[in-house]
Length: 112
Length: 113
Image (cartoon, rainbow over all chains, first blue to last red; front, side, top):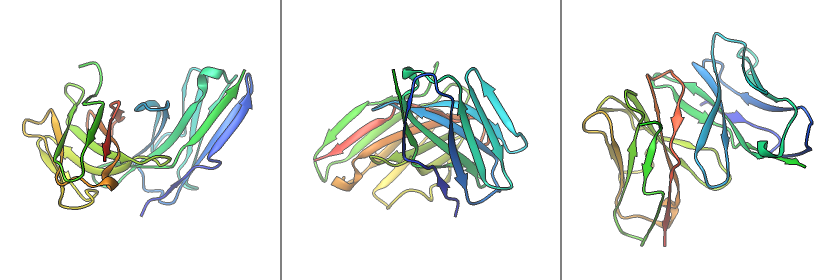
């Protein structure tokens, strides 16, 4: 059974800091990995999708990497801003139906 | 539509009542998923549709839960004899095909009192 772990559960950083969010998964047989952002009381916004054959993806200040063999992904946020404060969820797509298995998320707070 | 739409956004119901939650996926997306998110947890898979058929309903917790997608577009999640433990945010996602990027709706917050 696929399990996804995100540690720590919460993180607080000063504005302007570069930071890395970690995600690990137990079964390397994945189709893809997605990083999502969730604001309080809202749905999930897709940030980056990495296919299993890819090593990384970039969008603006965000860069996500994937090391499938070791079961790890990182989300790098450059020059963090207060508006980046949210919960960041990592999810892997596995199985014949590509259902997503999620971690519990990392709640990020960027202090002005 | 521009994104995945879920209605209602909030639903309060009494224990034992029947509820229906609706999901309008992105036009042209053949894959549709329902997930359930409890406070402080990541979403958990409930059911997957490919077109009109439920290809995987292994995540439905019991037979009080049922979902349909009769025309391969809009889906309805139905919960009979609701219990307080059913209180959660129910999220719908769609993707172009089964291994494509998933797009989520805003969710329906269900509260059973």
